Image (cartoon, rainbow, N blue to C red; front, side, top):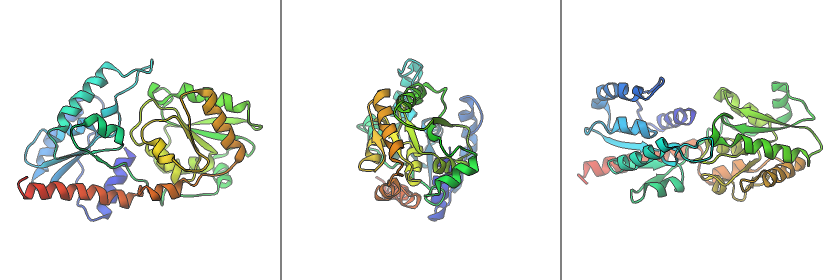
Length: 310
């Protein structure tokens, strides 16, 4: 939930008074338990901005305040099972979210693909932004020393839970083996999972590349964070990653083929050049203040229509 927390912080910095109803705990009943807490705070609110589909259901359980929902990814794209197919349950959730979207005052999604799923409902495509102060260019050797990594080993990040079949860990492992036959130095795959978010920049500074093999993504923040650190990225064509990496040096988009992914990764590792992703990120306007302004414009539009009785 770090991207949501960062967006809240950026909205507050831009002058929005944000009161958070945090929905925590295990199981789906936590969403039902959040409804009374939400209702108690309605009087002081101009609108409700819910993040993720289930939270949108909670927000829509009232008609006193306008509701904006940010769909985050698998709430519209579905969840992948071990066979690479969408689960039956997630397909049902996607359809329910499409129905809920018709009742909302505004919808925000992270990619054009997600917006197409909601058609004919109109959606604002606003990916999450990146904290460019936290994620910045850094000395790779110094970061490797801080983590105790070996100087003559090439380190490749895998972002995500390797036990989640939707993240394509097996594909990335096979791609790494293919790359190892082409690179003169040992290659180690580092799983970026269970790492505190404030430590993620250190891992990105220390790594030589990142590989992404997901079956579905919206606008993966980890790719934008890597871009902010000028970390080279090799990815399958998923979510908005092809658009994010278009024209970015030392990065590659490859089919879901381990040999092609491995060849691209080996080429990047052998060239030993950081990317120019940070400049591309700025061109896309994906720094947090710019994204906050776009979200506030959605709020203003909703409240203006409400005031005008539209």
